[in-house]
Amino acid sequence: MNLPERQNTTTAEIYKWYASKPQSHREHLGASIIGSECDRYLWQTFRWVALPQFEGRILRLFDTGTREEARVFEELRGIGVELHTHQDGQQIKCWDKTGHFGGSVDAIAKGLPEAPKTWAVVEIKTHNAKSWSGVKAIGVAESKPKHYAQMQVYMRLLKLERALYFAVNKDTDHVYTEWVHHDESASSVLLGRAESIISAAQPPAKLSEDPAYFGCKFCDFNAHCHQKKVATVNCRTCSHSTPGADGTWHCNVSIESRKLTKGQQERACEQHLFIPPLVPTGVAVDAGEGWVEYEMPGGKTFRNGQAYLTSRELEIAPQDVIESPQIAEIKTAFPGARIEKVTPRKRRNAKDLSAMAYAPLEPYDPAKRIPGDPMDDDLPF
Image (cartoon, rainbow, N blue to C red; front, side):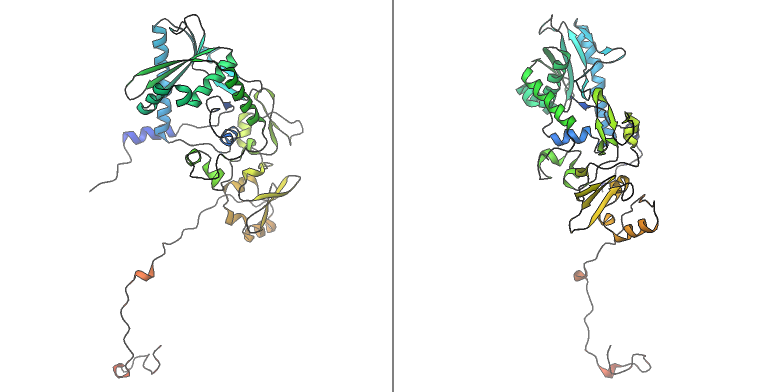
């Protein structure tokens, strides 16, 4: 007999510890993802449409990759490489002209055996055996295009012509290194792509209309693209905010068009008004000062706005609640009333009555009547 695995084990507690650590949005569009095949994924990541929540085991796996960097740094210095990993006490960062796109390099090195006099970007990645073998067999550009794109961007922004790709096999500890040349044409395309994502006011087209398509099936935004899930409320999903110069964000309903801190962006205000495509429960058909009207399948309409259904209500309310006439009546009778929580109705499991066994019915026989029976009559019902 197979017993369920115990939940209160040391392993479980360690995973819980990792999962308990705060997870937050990245403020910029990262060079590490610019090689992704889907523009919509990049836009939704940059616009904080949702915050992926990783389980403890995955967070520990990420940490393993970070810890491997220190070991590689020691090894490179051990063979005489001049290595720089920090600038002014922080990781070396590089940004494009908008200040919204870039990232942090693992290191910059000189004295590498491939070209001892050449400064190069160092990019360290850990792989399982299958992934590592693929990189070694066909090279990083073909096997890991996202990693290749990341290095191309770093070389372009740091004005370097070479990069060392350092791949570690986590299963066997084998190491594979590849000397990568800067491709000016490739890096120009990548920077142009980033700029178009940052400046886009609306989400780009989906990679596929099929939710089971491989590039969509395991995406963090599958529910938002294919299952009518409304975006998360924050300033970046609001029609009133725009990205500004030097990596800043501005609120357009503020008198001073004030710059928004990361904390302000995450909290958002009560005037939040969704960018219309981020409300897939309906199609935007009209708009006015502080509201957008949507039409749902079937013809019913609702408005998103501070005086109507707020963005926070739309974020948590399913379609049947949004279109419920009782909600509209309550809001009319009690101005300022808000949907705070939606609890799914519990449904009892329906039984298949066709599978039940019944005793056969006998023909009614008046001779078998029991004297005094309250049903003692000639009408058998």
